[in-house]
Length: 281
Image 1 (tube, rainbow, N blue to C red):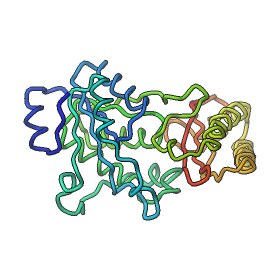
Image 2: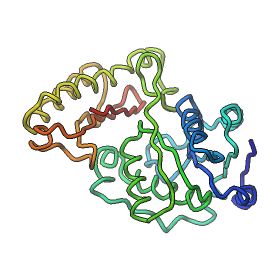
Image 3: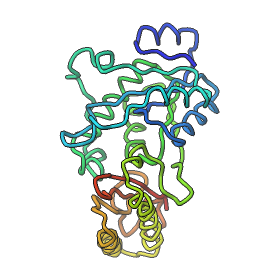
Image 4: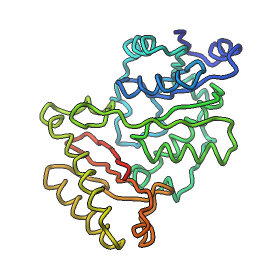
């Protein structure tokens, strides 16, 4: 694997590879990230992984400064996983001048759920992903379904800008007890880590109950009960909800009657650590 810290070096190395697959990350890699690399390799082109902790997607009181930077370890893991190229720019290389031109996602998608809980987050995500697309010029890119709303946003951005990039989504990789793998899991204390699978259990219960609902009011009542139950177990939930997969809006009576594809989504804090998860249903 070749590692580059500047755009000029990366583009020179990629010159002879017209097809390439991008796996964007913020580092502190785990098995979920390596599964993205494996999926990228299956697409048949060299995999370019990026590692960059993007300041633009963090709120003023979030964990940008303490987000783990583990480049040496990450480099070894990517090399073992068969990644061809690593692009690891510093902030000056990524943003050589203030990023005053930004991608503003559709508020109908970016302003709900995680977008409502973290104002400005998805603008930061869309802007850095668009910039990585411009830098790497991939023919494909792989993202995890754990960040369900983010994946939907990126797919819409690619479609609306007519970018020649195929977006592949990979199912959430989980520990044996069901907890979705996340770099932020490392913030959990041992006691919190033992409790963390409650989030997936809550999603399973909500999804199963929602499939028996007949009216939107029934779903709202189930969501409220799920929020109360999770709160009673010591969590601070931002949302625990069932939405239509097509647009992440609340299902209507027709959707429930016709069995439209839905997804249960959750974001909640356990102590100081915010976890997200989802379950298609």
